[in-house]
Image 1 (tube, rainbow over the protein chains, first blue to last red):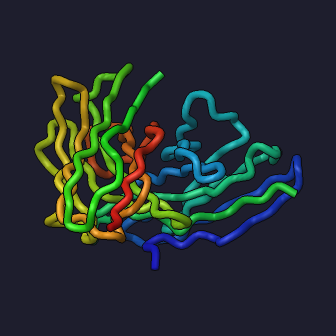
Image 2: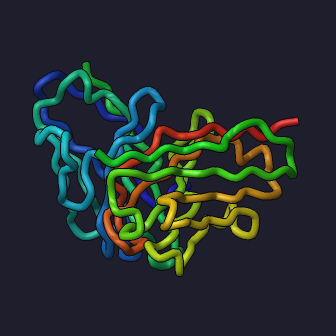
Length: 109
Length: 121
């Protein structure tokens, strides 16, 4: 049981806007910045957002937001190369640990 | 661009030990917290351990506490993970990840390519 809850799977068509969610509580998402990590075919993870910041080289169709204890990753204008597993993660104060969501498998139809 | 290069993985017997290294380059290593994350076959990402920029504070997942030790040598720009009393459930690809600041609570911005640890008889 992950401390952060993500959808198991999400799908969208090319060009569509999709939003992935990550739900936690006041000890984690409610208190700390969230990172979003993309993993393609079980290769090395790549950071697509940290907090509200877009890493260099990541297209600006990726954006992130947070409301209370839920964080969201939005991909505007979905591309075939966006098909991947996406993980959210943040620090948990009560656990004194970094926690990850179970991951969302994004399929581009 | 930032580079993180893990090494030291391999096949080890249950109860054995292994030391992983993560060589960092193209950033000021001593200014950032560093973390180890692992991924068992077919599973999701699992946090293992974090060390602050100076090495003064370390944090561990309950699953590895007392068996693994994270450390860093800022003069060599290298992060380490000493793994003792290894179990089959420690089998995974181990990634090092760079924090976005000095604090242990910040997200990561760069990841290494990973090194595979297999614990099996």
